[in-house]
View 1 (cartoon, each protein chain N blue to C red):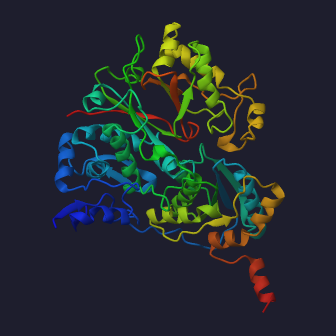
View 2 (tube, rainbow over the protein chains, first blue to last red; view 1 turned 90 degrees about the vertical axis):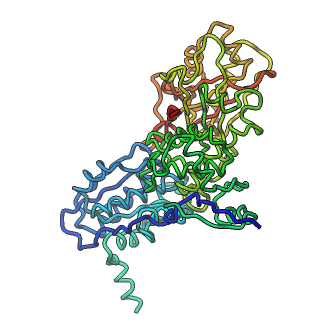
Amino acid sequence: MSVITVLRPDRPESEPATHAALPAGRVPIADRASLLLIDNGKSHAKIVLMMVAEELRERLPQIEHVEVFSKTSAAVTVTDDEARTLAERATLVVTGLGDCGACSSCSVLDAIKFEQLGVPATAVITEPFVGLVEKFAVTQGMPGYHNVTLPHPVATRDDTEIRALVAGRVDEVVRQLTGELAIETIAHELSVR
Amino acid sequence: MTETLTLDESAVQEEYFERGWTDGLPIVPPTPERVDAFLAAAALRPDDSLGTVVQRNRTISAQDAAINAVMAGCKPAYFPIVVAGVRALTDPAYNANGALTSTGGTAICTIVSGPLAAAVGMNSAHNVLGQGNRANATVGRALRLVAMNVLGAKPGLLDGASIGNPGKYSLCFAESEPIEPWAPLRVELGYSLDDTTVTIIASEGPRQIANLLTGDPEWVLRTFASSLRAGHTYIAGKGGQCVFLLGPEHASAIRDAGWSRDQARAYLMLQTRLSAADLEAAGVPLESTGAHTMVAEPDGLYATFQNPEDLLIVCAGGAGAGWSAVIPAWAPKNNSRSVTKVVEIR
C-alpha cells in the first residue's frame, strides 16, 4: 500500500475565529437612552422591530428616542463606517428580521458588530435559522451569541399575530440587552413562590 | 501553514468524504506536488491573497484555491481562470456572504470569454451547459469547492439553501465567438479582444428556452421574456440581472433581422415589465417593505431590468432546432451584482 501526503482544503480555524470577541458590557440603562433598530427591509421586519421598540419603551422608560436605520439590502451587513456612526448615538440595538439564510446571518453579524463597538445588541430571527446564525457567531469569535427567536414564518402573519409573538419574547429582549430580568418577570416569579 | 495529512492512498477518498471536504463527488487528492504545479501555472506564491470576504473573516490564498482546484480535477492550465473566478467571488459587489448563505441557493454562474477558453479546451458549443467537458466542469467545481471549504458554504454550516440547484455543482461555460458583427462579452464590458475574462453572477439554475417555430426576433425574444416576467422568477419586476445564452438559431434570427444586441436588450427590457396584476395572477403579492419595496415606473409597470447592461447576452451552444437558455440572477441587484475579472497570464 502506498502512502501519500495531501493538503487539507479548508483551514483548521475555519470553524472558530482566530480571536475571541467580547460582547458589550451590560450596565444599567441611563435616562435619555436611544434605541437603534436596524431594519433589513424584509416583509414585516419594520413592523416587528417597531413592536419590539414599543414593548421595550414600556419596560425600559429610560429609552427616550428610537432611531430606525434601513439597510439597502437584507443580504448585506451594515458597513463599518455606518456602524461606527450609528453606535455613537445608540444605547441599545435590535436588528432584524432574520427570516432567511442571508438576512438572518447579516442581522446577527450586525448585532455582533455593535457589540464589538460597545453597544448591547440582539437580533430577531425566526426559528429555522437558529443553527445557521450560531455558526456565524462562531466565525466572529462570539460562540453562543444570543438572539431572539420567533416562530416561522412571520412574513405571512397579520399584525395581531405578530404583536402576540413579540409580546411573548420581550422579556428575553430585555434580558439580552440589559442582563436583567424584566420587572414583570421578577414580579411573576415572586408571586408564584 | 496548511495542514497536511499522510494517508494510505486507498483511504484518501473516504477521508475527504468523511471530513465534508467534497461536493458529494470523488476528488483528486491534493498532493503538494500537484498544488505546486497549479501555483506555478499562475505564477503565484502560496500565500498570495486572492481576496477577502469580510463577513466570514476569511482571506482566500492562492494555495487555498490551488488545493481546491486540484481536488476539482482541473489541469494546471485552467488555474489562472480559477484564480480570476476567485478574485471575482471575493469582490464586494458579488456579496459572497449573502449569495452563498441565501435560502435561494445560488449557483456561481461562470462565463469565460476570450482566447484562453479555447486554448484550455473549454466548451462553448453543443451541450455547453451539460456534462462531458473537463474544463467547464472542473473550473466551476473548483469555485464551488473554494466556497465550501474556505468560506464555509456547506449545508448545515453557512449555506442556508432551501432547495439549491444542480448549478451548485458547477455552472461554467465559455462564450462562443459571437456572430458578426456582434462583439464578444469581454469587449462589451470594456476589455480588450486579446483578454480573457471571467464573469460570475450569483444565479438560479439555467432554464432552457425553446422556440423552434419562428425566426422573427420579436417572437424569439418574447419567449425569453416570458420566463423572466413569470411570477415564480424572484427578480421579476424587481431590477435584477440575467444571462441570456443565445443558441445559434436565436442569435441568427436577431442578427439577420438587422438587430444589434442593444436593440435586443431594449426590447427585452420592455417585454419583461409586468404589472401588479400579473404578479397577483401568479399568486405573488407585491413586496412593499424597506429595501424590498417594488417601485413602479410612471406607467405603473414594474421593471425586471433597470439598465441595459444588466442583460448579459452571450452566444453559446450548438446548432439545433431553436434552443437557448436564461440564467437569472438569484436576487435583485441591491443584493449581489455580476463581477468580471481579467485572467492574468504571467
